[in-house]
Length: 202
Length: 344
Image 1 (cartoon, each protein chain N blue to C red):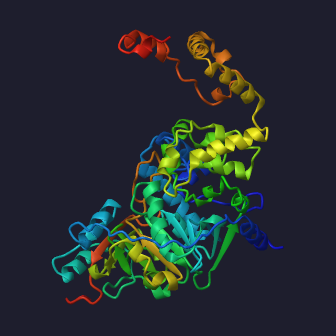
Image 2 (cartoon, chains in turn red, green):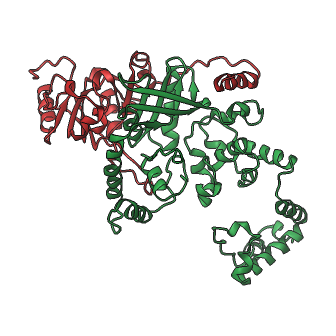
Image 3 (cartoon, rainbow over the protein chains, first blue to last red):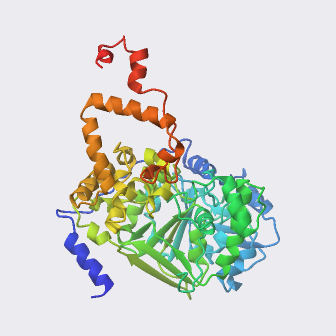
């Protein structure tokens, strides 16, 4: 018998008696004080992230451009042009020198202040970790209410890799003092920019 | 793996501190929680050449970030655990705050995941419940900073999942103990446990410390861990905070019965229990014993209290004995206000 067969046989033999039907998962409406975008922003800031909103989307794009400090800028979005091309990256560790990365989020989650990426948005997964700073474009209409709503997305059935980022990297491992950054990005900034901007983004 | 000539580097800050210091992790959420920033500065100065006089937490975390990144960049394999695996999609979910597991899973060409068989949940929708429970109960945050879902390897890379039993399938057959398999390793039982908070995780000499360790470790090595279920006051705080409703303190008590029935009680504990049983069933004897114990603790020389039979003092200081017993204090200060006080 292989180890797998042995384990499965013992599990089958030791299965606790009785019926074990899959439970229906209850949904609880999430409080969204001040609206969904405001709730998202509050939770994002509580987790160490920050938000960018101009009065017009063109202003927000300008605010994003002001954030692009450092010699190496790598963009995975059409709205921003960087100086490191993702299609020329051969190995994941090639992105270790990136100062600022710009990525679009699939969705945001108001309950937690999280943003979701898959390999489709990141193109090279390490972009979201090796860069020193991460700027995330998020369409306000793409914010869902709770984490349970987020798990309804088809990306969790289709993508090879999917990840929620909730603020920048952090650690409380020394004296339980929470600090940013730890080993991932130093800062995470969310800019509210629609998928098809009305203004002249370019 | 070290014996097989493979160098393994811990990438979590707390785990790395412990690895560099040659110690086990003492807590599943904060592995180096028992160390002060000064201790960490000393370990990093010794092992990583940092400034021994700088114990700023940001400085120390940055030392580790800068020394670990190059190792991850050239590593041939990244090893991660798994918080939840999803049967319906074959996904493994890894939660971190530092981003270290996400770097380790996405950078090297080989990703090896180790998971216990009990990490499996049926559906993606179940993650909506469990991911919520984990961060809330571990850290009081709505979510871990990073929640990675690996469903298949990147093109050109490899991903392997090692599914570990290590006594779990046998535990499933133990009527009183199988529900401990529901544990999601949030550490809430440790954070609330008065014994753990005093003794620290290292004193358990096991991977799983605290209340959950008391009921899990004996299923892994009954003989080695047969004294652990006695390290509890059975106050039940662990059961109250457990987000997956494991009746931890009841299982601790059930283990004591199993251990006593199997004759695993150490001889000295049996003798002490017999004496304690005598004394505790006779109130007058008890009061005399307590007051004379206090009196002797205050005057006995150090070597008599800290003798090899008193295992408590191995690695610990005895608490200072109070000047008088509670009963004598009560008699003096409140004795006249209550009829029970006079009943000596």
